[in-house]
Image 1 (spheres, rainbow, N blue to C red):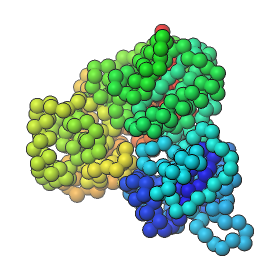
Image 2 (cartoon, rainbow, N blue to C red; image 1 turned 60 degrees about the vertical axis):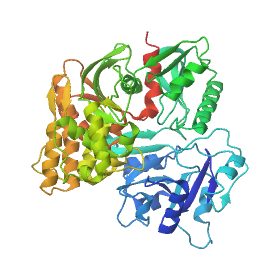
Image 3 (spheres, helix red, strand yellow; image 1 turned 60 degrees about the horizontal axis):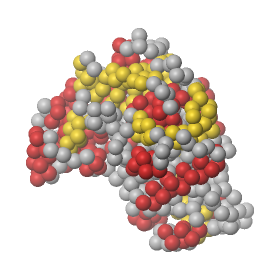
Image 4 (tube, rainbow, N blue to C red; image 1 turned 120 degrees about the vertical axis):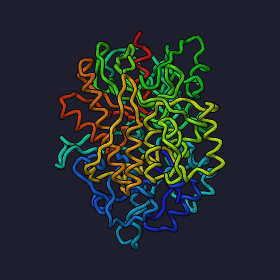
Length: 550
């Protein structure tokens, strides 16, 4: 059923029907990516997920976001709604039409939990205009529930999660992590710690949001999406015009990512006219965004951990495992994950077994056929891959921690090929939660400014051969990354007493929990994202501060 809401159309089906969910997946071309679900009230939410005090407050708040919650075993939701995932994305009915979907008094009983996913094909912007929806959703929906109120601006559902530190169910131990800032939150203004001239920051190419600012306020757009098709580029242009009209900000300066091939950067250059376009390194923007959220001024410096999947580095490599001493005016790269080749670019992102083989090659570990990623790689592909790694043909060096998560997931036998971004890491985290690490300890090498994953990889392989479960391997790996963060922070304590955590890797609830506990126990002041996402949906805020810092 196509349902017209407040920010666009949803596609809905019975979350308790395996057949309906499978059909919706097929029509949307969604692979295994989890669906969100909608329930009529907080009581029903508690029937399907573990809802603590902090989560209930967010679920029932006026913004009505999707909240990621641990799924209950007895939930009347088929596993295919969120395959291989311990969480459910849950939201309460929020639009006037939504109660009709669950039935009114006297109606025959119907589903109490509905899949509620954006009305579009995978990768496209959400449908919001009636004519467009009738056209684009005609092969996706069997029926329609519409209203006559026009939607002027498309706006996807926002997504939040709560990371709980400790066992008590209270607000003090609850850390809010926004994963997508859109309906209900955007374009509400964000106070800036320092004034800026009228500026447009265009964000990045993944999970794009843009921002305009003037004086001490910034306005971030709704979630626009990945800039990889014409429809999203058109949505980007429309959002830019709307945001400038809404705020009456006429940008005098444009700020973009340093990646020369980013479409968002190309848009800035094409539309700048006589205005300057300033570029900002991706991971500097990540750290600056969390600094801005917490009101740090232009004299402050933080020890920033910018961990993600990809970002253009100052040396032309793909960064993603960065430790920076950073302020708005500049940064110093204190440490980073050792470079490994990224063979074939995006194909190795979609096939984690290739990333595992690249890490093994870089660590000098043989490709024995008893290892899951070696077995998953067809012999012909393995031969070509070995040649690529030896010659460097088609290989870009990367220090990405996100890609290391992919490699460990493959080595642990969890996921060799992915259907959606970060699937391998998400499934590894899901298996790792609540697992006792036991006596096993993984450690990274740390040589001057280089973080060496080789000792950790050898320990993973040893455990796998000894029959240690993927969940325990994953738990030990998460603990090793958290211990690495604490170890580096303690070694660099004199540079800054404040630690900033940013980048998509810190969407990982288990890792964020372990890192916060370790840093707090060692006396650090830690700042994390609570207003904009740690992923690329938040970098436009950092671009504003860095690009105008002088």
